Image (cartoon, rainbow, N blue to C red; front, side, top):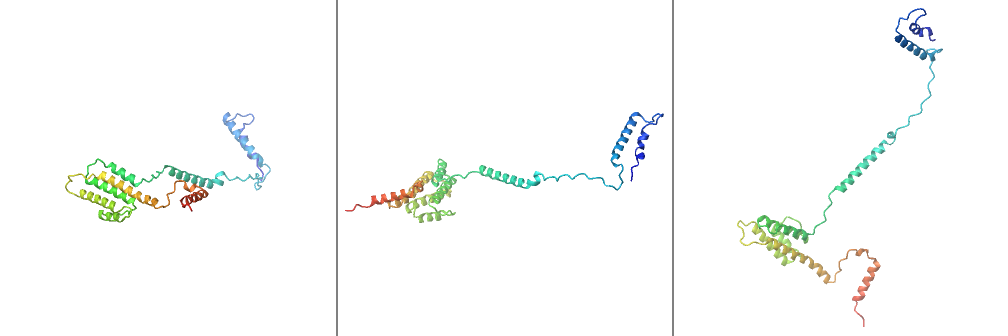
Length: 254
């Protein structure tokens, strides 16, 4: 199928005025129409001499588009970001969490509690605090079972403890019973009990009683306690010290 060039450029003929005639279009409109005709002619120029069934030549193939960065490493980047956020959260939690307080010895804790009650009127609440503080100290100091016991049951457990001893157990039991009598008494006692000073004195006697087994072990020739850093001494030096001690303790032969 050939291109009908006369038909294709017929608008150009209508746009251009005939020779010897006056144009029936305005100059601006005629210029626009002439430009459109020339553009149409330029666009149809490659089709000259070709049939309608003929396929025009194809453009060369473009190179394959490479995958983007996120297509290649998006999963790895997301996993690394999640791990980093988790590590930061754990580090912040470890840095901001409250640090555990060092354990307070029972004798220090009971003395602080009793000193806070010094000078208070000996009401039922104050006497209850004094007796409870003393009982908590005895449970922690002499490894008594931490159970909710009555005063009679607690005194029986205290008397059965060999480290406390019968004499100290009797004095402590008498003091605890006096506190119970004053707490539940309907009328105030004419003479103060002096609960806080007496409790502090009982704590001092209990501490002296706790030190007695250690002193008795040393007097009986038991092994002395290891000093801090004794494990760092070489075995050869420790063996030499043991030999020197044995040579010193061995009686001279005649």
